[in-house]
Length: 189
Image (cartoon, rainbow, N blue to C red; front, side, top):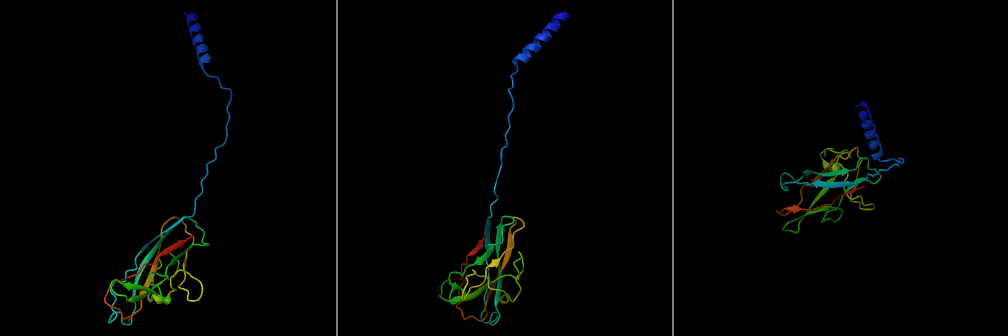
C-alpha cells in the first residue's frame, strides 16, 4: 500500500508538472506618463452699486463713493510678465471720463473707478478714493485712461479678490433717473 501511494503521489506530481505552461522568458519596458499644467485665469465681478446720489445736500460738494470687486483665479505660479487686470472705459466714455447714462434721460452722470491702495488681494479702498490711480485699460499715450492693475504671481489656485473703488463727483446737475454703465473687466495672463 505504501508503494502504491508513493507511485500515486509521484504520478500526480508528474501530471502537475506536465500541465503547467512553460515560460520562455520575461521582457520589460518603461511606460512614460506625462502631463502639462497650463497657465489659465478666470475673472468675475461684483457691481459697484452707488445707491442714491443727492446733488443738492449730501453730494452737493462731497463725492459718493462705493466699492465693487474683481475676482481673479489663476493657475498656481502663473508668470507675472503679463499678469494684470484692466477695466474698460464703459459704454458712455467721452472726453476722458466715464459716465453712466440715465434710463429715460440722455443725461450722463460722470464717475471714476480707482485702484485699491495696493495690488494685494483684499486691500481696502481708503477715502478719498480720488487719491488713487484711475483703474483703466492701460491704453498708452496722451489722455491715457488709467493704468491696469499689475498682479503678483499666485501662490495657489485660490481666488483673489481686488476692490474696485468707485467715486461719483459731487455737485453734478442731473435729472431724476436711474443711471447705469457696463465696464468690461479683463485679466491678461
